[in-house]
Length: 114
Image (cartoon, rainbow, N blue to C red; front, side, top):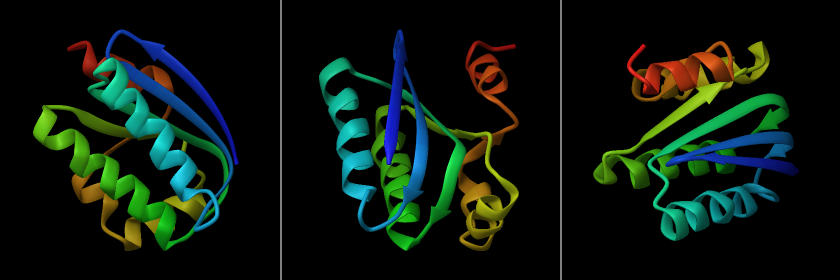
């Protein structure tokens, strides 16, 4: 799993590349939690364009970060989800609680009140 981080104000953009599974979930969790605690990040945008596979551990990390941000008044947003990954997330009910966007620009715009 490769992670590309970009921070703008209180927003962390994380581009994931690889498989989000039991072998990589803790690395993703730590990367996000570190920025929430160190920089006071309130919005996390996950770009999943280059993610090939997600298992229950990966879903758990996403749900866990959502639950961590909620009491802080923060948001978790997901963008660029490949159709086969979206199907897994849809079966898990994620789109009912987390906002999904076509691309990063739309995720950023929603946060700016556009």
